[in-house]
Structures are given as C-alpha cells and as structure tokens.
Image 1 (cartoon, rainbow, N blue to C red):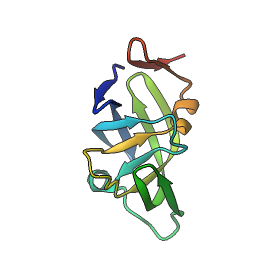
Image 2 (image 1 turned 30 degrees about the vertical axis):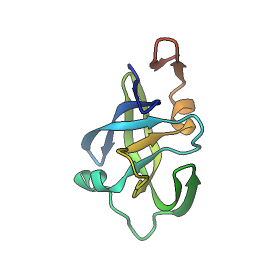
Image 3 (image 1 turned 135 degrees about the vertical axis):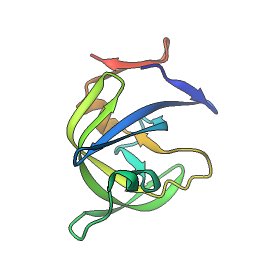
Image 4 (image 1 turned 180 degrees about the horizontal axis):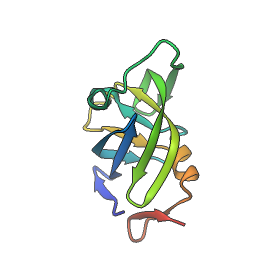
Length: 126
C-alpha cells in the first residue's frame, strides 16, 4: 500500500470489521513510535463500536497530548494487503488539532509482519 505524506507524516487508509460490519477510514497515521493502534470514536460509532461496561479503559499519552481510550477487539483490521484478525484497538477522541482518523501503531505493524519501505513509501507484507 502506498503511503501519502501529509505535513511530512505518512498516512494510509484502513478497514475495520466489527461484528460483521465494516468501515474504511482514510487519514490514518503510520506511527512506529506508537505502541498501540487507536481510532477516532466519531467514525467507529457507524459500525457500533461503542463503550461497554467491561471494556478496559486506559490513559494514553504521546506527542499529540494525553487522552482516555477504551479498548475493543475487532474481527479484523486491514491495511492494504496486511490483515490481522481478532485485533485489540484503542478508541478515543483523537483531538490533536489536525485531520487524523486513527494511528496504526507498532502493535499492528508487528502482528501483520509489515515491511515499511521508506524509499518507495510503501507498506506491505513480509
């Protein structure tokens, strides 16, 4: 999958399947410095990803600031040819002052055995 540089940062699109419903989101940052994969709650409500009483809550912090998120296990997370089933994501506000719908973190990149080629600006399976 081709990466698109926006403001000097690499973005892609990702598809999430939850309880048989799927959504594709653009403006997803590929961030090897992020331990977890997080998506904007505003968009995931469209496929019924909502907080439930037993969902773990966490506080995450990074360069964009700190926020509280809830965790969900999705049926599948797809980024181009990369795919991971039964994958745990974090869901939060992602109000960082610029257009971002999610962050693909090192957890997904490792689980999908992704290869990040910065010369060709592509992300693909090993």
